[in-house]
Length: 227
Image 1 (cartoon, helix red, strand yellow):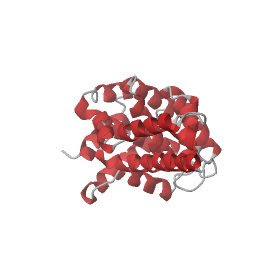
Image 2 (image 1 turned 30 degrees about the horizontal axis):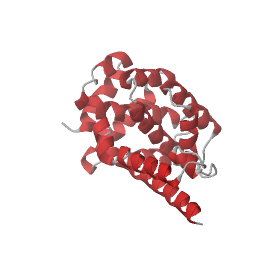
Image 3 (image 1 turned 60 degrees about the vertical axis):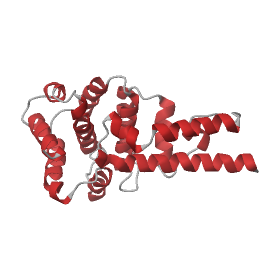
Image 4 (image 1 turned 120 degrees about the horizontal axis):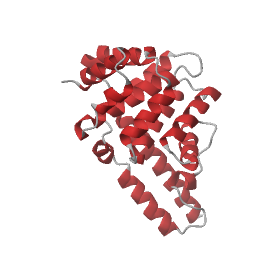
């Protein structure tokens, strides 16, 4: 069964009034985690896309970039997104249920946040309402304020990312300490690790962007230590 068929069934259940608890209770096995992750991004992404008052073609396209949809699954994916936009549940309820489902799996919640940032920036504008939306979701997810600021600095062009912040180190740390942290992050953010957490293969763009940012931060710090 295509992942999009399974996702469509779950979103249809939401739209018919089955409720978030019942739907997510069916998606707790390791095999279903990629389905749950995709539903979470769709549900929150569809609602966030309306945070600035308009769902644009760019935002829908951004979702398609995060989730690389095979031609045969395009109709099913479009139906999922449209159903999510029509659902009456508020985004805070979605976020709370998603937090409850993934529990203490902070890396999975970080992956979700990055998917939402990607969609938010699709039209090239980071609207204040989108910022408030994402801040509230991050709060519900239990994402640390500093970690949220790191994500925002990486995705929002005018929020220039500080390389030390990206790697979670201090400017007065030795290069050896920073190098160890860099290597840990490379291992942790390898696509295979994301798949093991339950992030679907369709979301590989998230891993690619994160690795670009991590490598850029390390290269910048290395140059500063050489000079």
